[in-house]
Image (cartoon, rainbow, N blue to C red; front, side):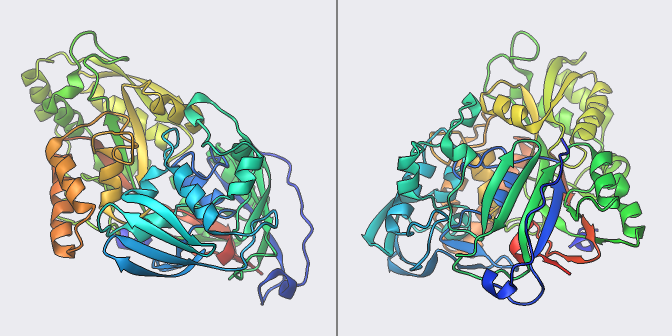
Length: 530
């Protein structure tokens, strides 16, 4: 099946109709696109929050040294070429005559500044420069990247290492990354100044974001969309009603129950595709006593309890009744399409409530226990409905779960403040490599990239050693074996409880052509409106 799917606001109408040749592209006339999805970005600071929607939209304004092409191959962006000076030093030749949106020149100073900035611990983006010891300016258009050891995923990581203007940040007192979990607001969290194809002109949180084409961009648009209005519409019925009424041109997170109806609409197209995102539960395994759970010892420290909770979940029923076929039941942390995924690792056993109750009794919980589950209600496909279904499944084995479902912004701040005992999260493999998921989610948390999204405080020495080795192993067969072992440990020790890999169909008006991608990151530079 997987291969088959390879608050509203008044619209601000921007002036269009400028000559296409003057806008840096050829073909169809300049156009506006009204795009809607269920959740908003969290910030405009490119180094603050490792959140897919934020990274994608902010990535229209900011650029990296390299980028993915339509086929997910790394290609030059702000760097034009690179070469190995030695096994642990890569020299990047930077693109000349590139301007930030404020008209200032892009130079090596901005790269070095951005490297130092993205590693600040209050942000969650350090994973994208993991393994880099130093970035050193050679001259205005040359940078040496000095590694701890050879790094097989460096280029994939660098696709989301966005470059910020040093002078602009200093001028606007934004040298430090916004501390999102502390509810800090900075100039950089509300404004952008990148080198990318679009200028973000306006952002009204939870209402709309407006982008317009950067006419001074060094590259050319591959579509004709020069103006974009992005509207987060949390309500599924409202979002789909806006699409059917023609008030928006495209919706990129369809409610599963509406997909068949949209397919049959004469005015709409549905673009099918998988997403390299896995939905899972994380349980607080570090606290001696749960903050929102039973008094006394933490039941989640016992692998028998974790196994029982996983065994109680009927993933096939969720796929059938809640996801309407638009998911793949999962037993590991990464989806098909991610390096390291194998079908034999990802086999899902049928739900077994009797076996789960026995495991709970063996662990000393014959009558179960009670805890609170935190869940977003506007981030992933049917997120709150999934949480409610699993709450009911856990109830069948005696585990009483209080569901706390809230918008993603307050939800993720709560998680990052360790103010949770269990939570649902979705994780997309931005680098298309399993190390990214293992290192971020289940490696022991440190001050750096290791465990940077491990807010359940998982710690497994054997897994840590494997991830440490795969970071620098350049022999693909050896490295893939390490990844397989690491994924197996995470599965067998139930370090998280995977539910499914998401599908992500998009729908748009018939006159709109979009390029689907499996990281659910629509790129406006590829969109054409006829």
